[in-house]
Structure formats: C-alpha cells, structure tokens
Amino acid sequence: MAECAECGADISAEVALEEGEIVECEECGAELEVISADPLEFALAPDEEEDWGE
Image (cartoon, rainbow, N blue to C red; front, side):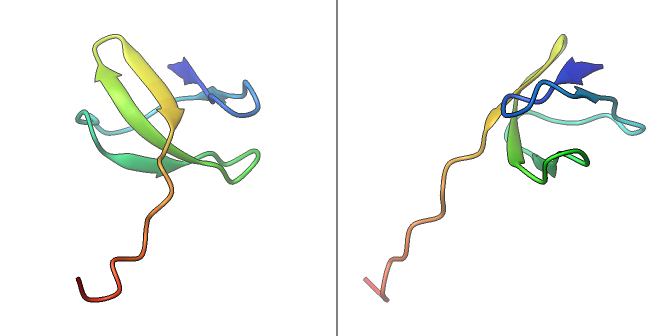
C-alpha cells in the first residue's frame, strides 16, 4: 500500500506493479507513475507531450 502523490489517499494494488507503470487514483483521478515497486511508491505521472509528427 502507498499514498497518492496528489491527494494522499491510500492506494493498494491487487496485482504486482512495475516501475514506470501508470495507475489512476480512485479518489482524485490523478495519473500516478510507479517510481518504486518495493516498497511501493508513486509520483505524479509526467504530462504527455505532443510530438506533432517530429
């Protein structure tokens, strides 16, 4: 179990998560990136940037 980096809600994962995965907080809807699988830690996921075909 870990806390949401946005609202502090407890987040538990029923399946094993890997670093780099993106999950959504059920409380606030924030997109979170797994920064550590053991112990489980989240950070706000970076915004996707448009590449405009470059």
